Length: 146
Image (tube, rainbow, N blue to C red; front, top):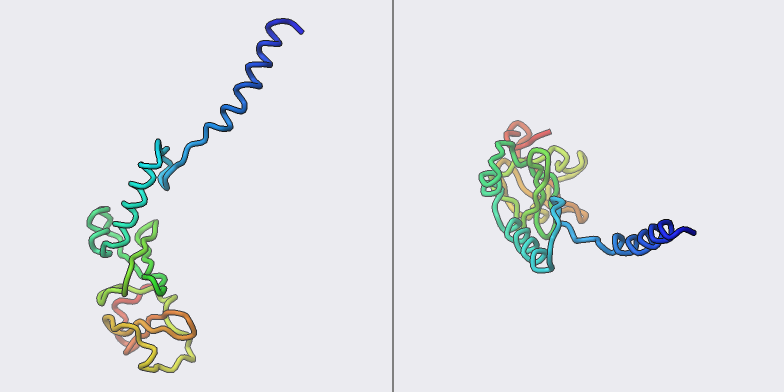
């Protein structure tokens, strides 16, 4: 083998493991994080984000899209906001907009003991380990979105 070919092969063999080990952590935006300190800062920022109200997030992002509650859990709720989603801790705010997918099954019979909290035009209820938006009056659906 010539000296040049040997040197090229040796260079490739040495660089391949180094490039495989060169992976760096990335945050959700795809930016490379330089240290665990940056990762910790990003986690704290996400924590602060979940403590904000939907109105605060809309104002910060400058997006006029409605935030529609699409999912409710024991820990909080998820809103659809334009082309992305947000998670919020705590109860659903009184003046929230709800996805029609959160309506209870048609055979559901309202029971006061299922009520988690009251919201505009209805209640957030929990039955069979699922959360729903129950309308008090089907004629008042101003905060319901399909």
